[in-house]
Structure formats: C-alpha cells, structure tokens
Image 1: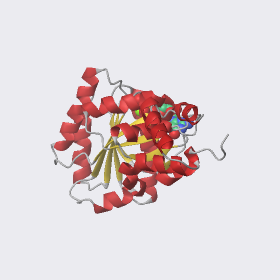
Image 2 (image 1 turned 120 degrees about the vertical axis):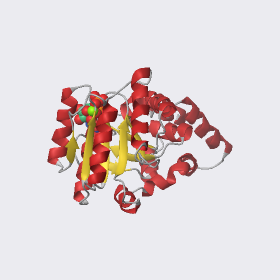
Image 3 (image 1 turned 30 degrees about the vertical axis):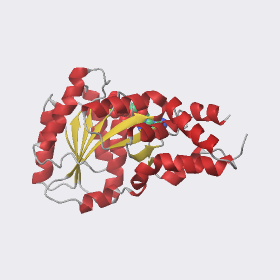
Image 4 (image 1 turned 90 degrees about the horizontal axis):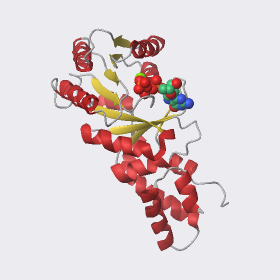
Length: 269
Ligand SMILES: Nc1nc2c(ncn2[C@@H]2O[C@H](COP(=O)(O)OP(=O)(O)OP(=O)(O)O)[C@@H](O)[C@H]2O)c(=O)[nH]1
Ligand SMILES: [Mg+2]
C-alpha cells in the first residue's frame, strides 16, 4: 500500500524501492520509520532549508552583482518564478536587473517586462537576438550601476535540442568572462506535474551545464511532489524554492521538515 502511494506521488521506482527496503529492514510503527527514511534521503540538502537569497546577496563580495541563470524546459515556470523573485527582492530593497535572454519570442520579453514593471526591477531586453550578448550587456550594466542582483531569463528548451543546449553553455561561459565565480547560481525550474520526466530533465540539463539548484513549480496542482525526493536522491540537487500558484507571493522556501510532514498521510488508510 505504501508502495502504491509512493509511486502515485511520483517518487519513481528507484527511490520507492530504496524507501521500501529501509521500511522492511526496521520493525515498528511505519510512520516514524518513513519520516526517518525521508529525512535521510533529504539530508544531503538539509542546508537548502536555511538558504536565504537576501543573505547570500549581502554576504557575497560586492564587485559583482549576484548572478542567477534560470533554465528549464518550455512552460516550466521560469519567467513567472523570476517575477516572484523580483517581488521578494523588492520587499528587501534589493536592486534587481533582469536579462531578457529568451530572445526567441517577442511575447517572452513582454511577459518579463510586465513582471519587472510591477515589481520595480529593471530589465534589459530586445537589444540583441543572441542570448549570450544579452547576458553580457546585462552583467556589464549590473556591475557599472552596482545592482545587487542580475537574473537571466532563458528560452524554454528540450534537452535533446543540442544547439539550444550549447547556447546555454555559451551563456555560462559568457558569465564566467567577468569572473570564474559567475554565475553564482544556475537554477533549473521544474514543473511538479512533469513527475519522473522532471528528474530526467534535471539530469540531462545537468550534463550540459553545472546546475546549482532546483525550483519546483505548480505544487498547487494535483502533483504530490514525490519527484522532489527522486531529484535529491538521484541527483543530489538542492531544492531552493517551491512555486504554489501564479501570483507574485506564491513562492515558498523549501523546508525539509515541512515537506516531509506534508508528504506523509495523516492516517494509515
Ligand atoms: N498554478 C501554477 N501555475 C504556474 C506556476 N508557475 C508558473 N505557472 C504558470 O505556468 C505557465 C508557464 O509559466 P512561464 O513562467 O511562462 O513558464 P516559462 O518556463 O517561462 O515558459 P517558456 O518561456 O515558454 O519556456 C503560466 O501560465 C504561469 O502562470 C505555479 O507555481 N503554479
Ligand atoms: Mg519564459
């Protein structure tokens, strides 16, 4: 029964087997054992529970703006999540500069511009068709005008589109031209509804570009979020934020204990 529940929650076969093996080894009430097992799986990313973007910005050396690349497949929620981050940053009086490096569609820039305007972020858009050139110009301005943070929106792409994956590598190299520390973060955005496919996406993107963390969106839908367990179990990627709706405030910090509490059913049915 637990096996069905785990698979239905998108834990995936491998991670489900691992959890079941631990449950079978130990005797006693299943609930505390399951809690302990999930805690052990999530232990490599325990620190992401205390991740605080505002503190990170304050603590990193000020010569460069804190720089984040947002990547992922089409429609995962990259642009929306950037909008939510702009909201958070503005609340903490941080000056944000966005790079609209999704140069594929005019509508992509408009959407990001809209989020920027509503949340008092500045944006560079439309100056070049080359995403790397856009990123370069943005970081350059970020440095000269002493922005706290630069966030780059990228076009959605499928991981088998080699040319587009190389474009991400080029963007990464472009950021590194300023300093080997840049970009400070490369975050992959994953739709919770994509289930185990989300884990494949993260693995494939990870092979192209050094991902530093993950944001899982659309947890307000029917998805149970078990894929978070497999992302951590199989890829050891930290989860930094969860998206729980389309509004600016609907972004939660990831918290291991809260996640486990929400994941384990209240009663043994
Ligand atoms: N319910 C819900 N919808 C979300 C969430 N995050 C994003 N969305 C919606 O998902 C859709 C796609 O979001 P975008 O932010 O445009 O996704 P994207 O990754 O930028 O898409 P592309 O640029 O086309 O690759 C939009 O309708 C968003 O409103 C979330 O946490 N919950
Ligand atoms: Mg987008």
